[in-house]
Image (cartoon, rainbow over all chains, first blue to last red; front, side):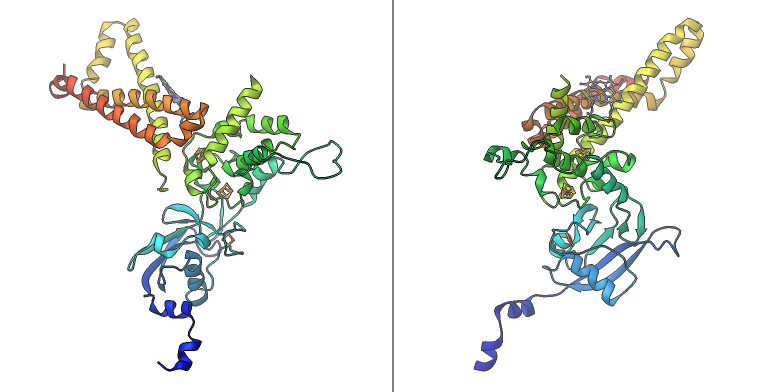
Length: 256
Length: 118
Ligand code: HEM
Ligand code: SF4
Ligand code: SF4
Ligand code: FES
């Protein structure tokens, strides 16, 4: 190797060349409302690196195999919450799932739209019912008292109470993994309860009673049968079922 | 099938066992109560309980009642304590162990009836 080449080759590029390519099959549940009466599986043969994200692989399919493949994605870094899908039987964000965690060389990755919401096309579902439930819990800070001169102070313990629930990115991985939601779409669902938790346990918010009343309605927390699918699915590692149980107890002690 | 973990199966079994116990209770009340229509009617119903499906069903209904009762306690612990949520998986394996042992014990004591009928 000449001195010249040695200087220009950077470490990551060298590492990339050394990495073997995996040969995998991507099996996607496709549905085109203008052509199909039922969804059907299509399989694409792809080469990918173990460290690629499933989203890279789906982009590969769209860019080089079939332009008509439809799905949502935006930030590609697990922040916007737009690419929740059912990957190998579990809800995950495609941009936060590495190929090596779901497939080996010669293996298959199956990808389906999230369940319980109407499929518009391929992996794209109608999110309106999900956001209607979100709006139903009054997802905004309510405090009618005059604002203090400086900020509204919280203690560290008070901030800790709502630390988990304020991490939610509204990706719907949880709600669309919930067996209760699949059967009954009127259930507000874990995502909305997490959002409600964020305000119920915010020491500065003053609408706690109203919020607990919404949670106590028959579309609220009592629908949850503690199946834990939501907790397993959350890409933000929010202990969702634990938060739901906290809200259930808050409702119960308020009634008592 | 969605690849949920222990919690999903715990929920599904709880619902199925709950419905099974309810069905058993209704059939039980009806068939005992049928005595008001006379002994012949009562016996006609009870003879069908000799069918193999009802004999094996006894083992499953025992296991179902035990599962439902113990998993019910697991749910109560989860609903009232944070630790219950943290250890729900371990508790479920405990519930399953008790259920399987009771099912086997029921099968053992019912063995003559399972094989030979009344
Ligand atoms: C040992 C006595 C029992 C205990 C400790 C018990 C406990 C429970 C609990 C805690 C639940 C709530 C489930 C949840 O929140 O996810 C439940 C649900 C249920 N139980 Fe029981 N139960 C008992 C006996 C029975 C009996 C005798 C029947 C039938 C006649 C029954 C039928 C049901 C049904 C149908 C459900 C609804 C299941 C669901 O919503 O998924 N249970 N039980
Ligand atoms: S709680 Fe988790 S899974 Fe549910 S919407 Fe928020 S980030 Fe997504
Ligand atoms: S814990 Fe409750 S909200 Fe979460 S998946 Fe289970 S039933 Fe649904
Ligand atoms: S694309 Fe934004 S979360 Fe995956």
